[in-house]
Image 1 (cartoon, rainbow, N blue to C red):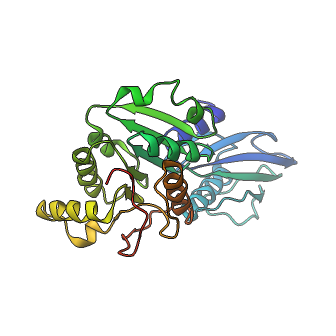
Image 2: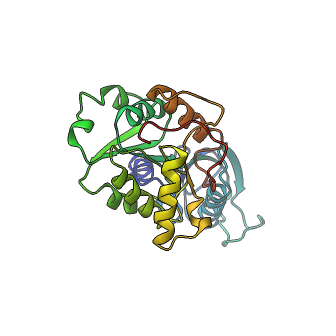
Image 3: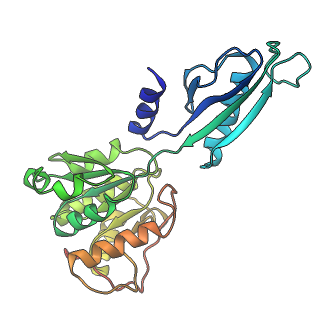
Length: 282
């Protein structure tokens, strides 16, 4: 695949990458200005000339990804026998400048239950670059006409209709953030159970009151989950200082709470005993 397809492949898979472009050539070099290569964590596509030049660029690109760097940078290489190298010598005699542009993976958010609050939350988050899953066991909640205002924004919105929503938890990428807000408490419980079996998920929020969460914790404890594991689920969701039970208010509060920290991070979240903004399905 070419560099455009490679970038799209990485973006679709939720993986980071770095686009390396030969921006300037002086003298002899293995590739011309404009040659491109895409570097992923495990694969590369294209070539900017092979040898020490390319191997060094790959190393730098993967270091940028590992450190989460977002700013482009330019590196210059002297291609002669006197240049210090790590991966062998290239004696073309010229100099090459390479522009490295990182493309970090988009954050992933999954909303389980696209009722009144789920729809409003999806509408807000769809305005932010991310992969946004809308998952529901009710097909009518995912009708194209109903979701038109969500799917027309900048997020990559993916509607998922499944009679067993908790099974889809296992398909989410590591670091995905999850909101559990279905129409059915039994379904919510199964989703919580599945989410706790994925310690690599990001934030996990459960809509509902403190009383609902106390009941869920008792049942989850009976299933063998520890307090530390259950503390990964936030219930109620949203900012504690935002009051109101209207769907749009809860959605704004939940989105703001998610965005207080970088949504690509995987923080641990503990429910607050003082939180007073319950969801609507308590």
